[in-house]
Length: 357
Ligand SMILES: [Zn+2]
Image (cartoon, rainbow, N blue to C red; front, side, top):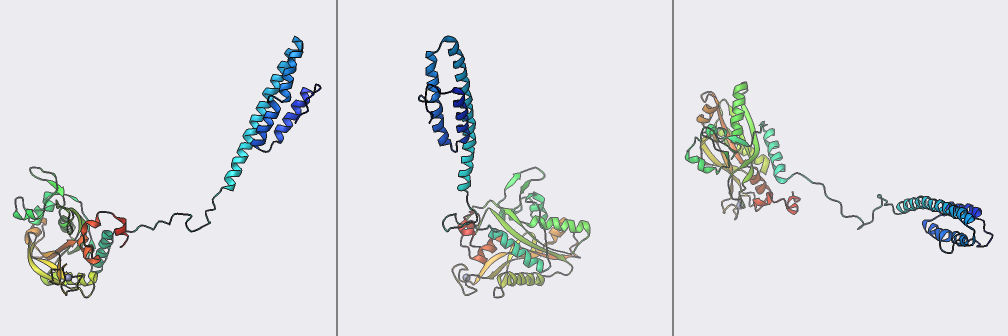
């Protein structure tokens, strides 16, 4: 690259070397240039070898000059290398840039579907809509309750044999009052009636959906944590016929006009008289099948006329007001509406199951 001769002038070598470094266009070219300028066969090496032929004074001067030139060129090479490396990286990134508007089948993973509400939440929303259309308001209440709201005010005093109907999760057992996870949404009825009495806003037409807890071992038809919806009407002159008519209107509105309801005598401490209500089997539409044990009917929930003892607990005069209440499982409703064979599927969060609804 450089003609190596006895007459080579160090100053012109330095100038030409700096020009060459500035003109280099790639890090690869620069690496070769560095070898040519400073390697064993470079002019710089040749100058170094000449040192031995010089007298001491000249050797000292040339030695210091050579060192200065070598240091300067190394520094220029470093600087140029940095500039070229950055440019090459930028060019590489530019050429490898993804066009995000380009689509080739198989290039991208299949797009994720949008999520949706859980089937139990959908069912709760649909049930609320049906009852709101029938003139009910929607009320909620706490899931942690005192013994009084969950049992006492509902005509189930301590040691009442009916307590065996609800296996209860107690949080704290006190001498005068215990706290527990509510076993039904009925405590919300007590809260609603108390508020209505305190604010003078009777009559009352409300439904109360929510989560409930019982010490049940989960099986195909039961969950330890489940959802219930209850309805409560307190008004003047309410009769059992109003209860039956409300249940029938709801059944037709929610399950369809070919599904009907019927009431069978039952016992609950907080209603008198009490009934279980059944609806036409949604699988066989009344013809008889295994699900309904060939009866054509399946049980949905319980209902009855509000017991005067419950009115007394919240300060409502049973001579002036009467009322009815009903309740059933939202999970059970979803199970029957969508013919879900095992209720445990509702809490297993298997997306293959959930995305069917
Ligand atoms: Zn059936």
